[in-house]
Length: 392
Ligand SMILES: *Cc1c(COP(=O)(O)O)cnc(C)c1O
Image 1 (cartoon, protein in one colour):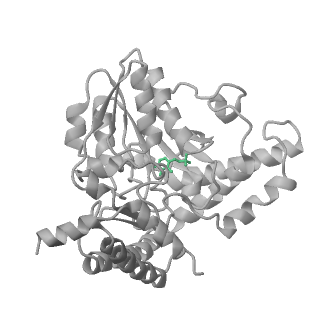
Image 2: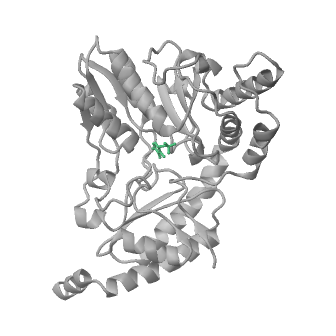
C-alpha cells in the first residue's frame, strides 16, 4: 500500500545527512563533554560546533544557546524561569489563547501558584495585534509569551512588532518558535526576542532535543539543578548525538528558506484550492497567506475529524485532527474555538502538514481520497441528511 506522511507538524523524519552526522556519537565518540581527557574534549568540541550552528541560524551568540530535552522543556523553563525570577516586580504574565499546551498548561500551573495570566484572544485568522498587547501590559507584567507560528492553523504572528511593544514597556518577550524553524526567517537580534524555544524533531532532528535561546543579560531561574552543564543553567549530561543532530538539522533547515517555502506553499495552495472547490461545506482555518508554507487546516461540516483520520489512515494517509497532543481527547481544539468556530464545526477539522519530501502527486492523491471519504461519511450522516432536507 502507498503510504503518505502529511503529519510533519506532529513530528518529522530524521533525514540521512542528520543521521550520518550523529552516527559517530554513539559507539565511537562517547566521552562525557565535562571530562578532562581527550574523550571528553572531542565530545565538547562537537557540542561547541552544534551550538555555533544553532546560534548562526537565528543570529544569536553561541553563549545564548542552551540545549534542553525538548520544546516542552524550553517553554516550561522560559515561562516558569521568568515568572519566578521576577516576582519582586510582579506576578502578571501575558500569553495567547492559541498557544501550545506546553505554554498553556505551564501558565495554568502558575495560576494555581498565585500568578495572574492574561490570555489574549485572537481574531478569526488567529492573529494577535501589537495594540492588543500594548493595552494588556500592566506595571506588574513580567513576561509575554506569544508563539511565532501556530501548530494547528499555521498562522504566523507579527513577532517583531509584538516584541517591540514589550521592549517599550521593559517586559520580557518569549516566543515558542517550535513550528517556525525552517519556514520563518528568524533573527533574534533584529526581531528583539529575549527568549525563543525550538524543538529538533519538528525539523528533521531526533525527538528529545530542544533549544532555549536566552538573550545575554536575561535572568532566569534555573530549571534543573545538578552539574555545571550549559553554563550552570541546565544541568544534566548533554545529549551528545542529538545535539550534533539538531546542529546539522538547523543548518539544513535554514540554508534555503525561500526555496523551501516556495516548494511547500505551491503544494499547500494547490491542496487548499482543490479542497475548497471540490468539497462542499469545507472551510480553510487560519489565514490564506500569512501561514506556515506546509500547513493545510480545513473543516468539513457534518463530519467527525476522528472518523476522517481513520479512513485516511486506511488509505495509507497520515494526517491529524488539530495537534497530535490533543488528538485522542474528544474536546474540540482550543485553537479552533479561539478563532470563533462553533463546537460542531471544530470537530470536523483536519490538519495536513507537509515537508520537503511531499510531492504534488501525493497532494492530488490525498485530495482525491478526501473527496471520496468526506462524501462517504456524509452519506451516512443523519445530520447531513437533515440539513439537505431543510435546505431543499
Ligand atoms: C511540538 C510543539 C511543542 C513541543 O515540543 P516537544 O519537543 O514535542 O516537547 C511546543 N510548541 C509547539 C508549537 C509545538 O508544535
